[in-house]
Image (cartoon, rainbow, N blue to C red; front, side):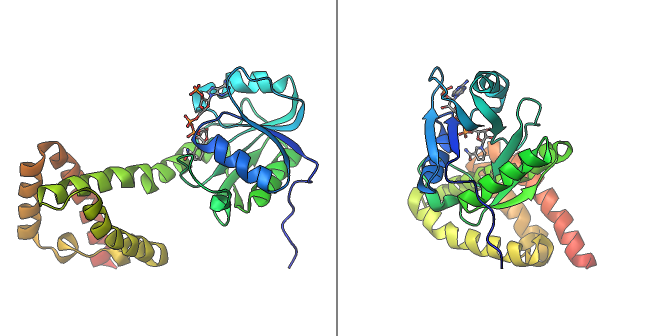
Length: 249
Ligand SMILES: NC(=O)c1ccc[n+]([C@@H]2O[C@H](COP(=O)([O-])OP(=O)(O)OC[C@H]3O[C@@H](n4cnc5c(N)ncnc54)[C@H](OP(=O)(O)O)[C@@H]3O)[C@@H](O)[C@H]2O)c1
């Protein structure tokens, strides 16, 4: 088996943006042996480099790209949703970063790549391999949908888990204890979904058609925090649709 092609060790790269992703990315690329500048903050001089990778909020990409264009040969961004209008390539690591992760966080994860030219795409591909990530191609027409999928798989899961934690608290199981007790349930659910998909994995009162229990749950949610009732209703409706597919399968 041939090894994936990585960036040449003499490649110089500037990481622009010292937020949640920028710091971790700079550390990981430095650990891979590249010459890395940054993560650079707003107002820092950007040295002459082969590659500038923007790790700034999506709205700041046009301005940051214009600054980097003065000294960097090729410019990329790390955004999932933003098209290539202002840059030559993009690489979006399909992972959540809080800024505290170790460099091996990139090993084995997906990385959506795109480039204006075949050479730009090849650069993004080699960058992904340098990080130990698994590149896959993403075109501009599908970015928003792809990014929405990532939000459902991470951000919205946290919203649902926060609701679970609040409801556990209303039952007297609080904070860290609730998270410790619910986490194995979550882990098994994710494992089942990964191997078999949602329809085959669904259990619980909606899968069983147990409307009495669902009504009792809804009343308890409404009593604990009426702000969660509409979320419960929306999720119950969407879950019923999955249960219908299960019944039809
Ligand atoms: N975090 C993740 O989980 C994750 C995952 C995959 C991809 N990404 C992508 O990574 C990019 C950055 O996300 P993030 O979560 O790291 O955001 P973040 O934590 O908000 O950090 C963005 C950083 O960019 C800085 N910045 C803004 N404008 C700048 C400029 N013109 N020059 C230099 N620095 C500038 C900000 O500084 P100030 O605070 O001073 O404004 C901030 O430190 C986004 O495109 C995002 O889609 C993030």
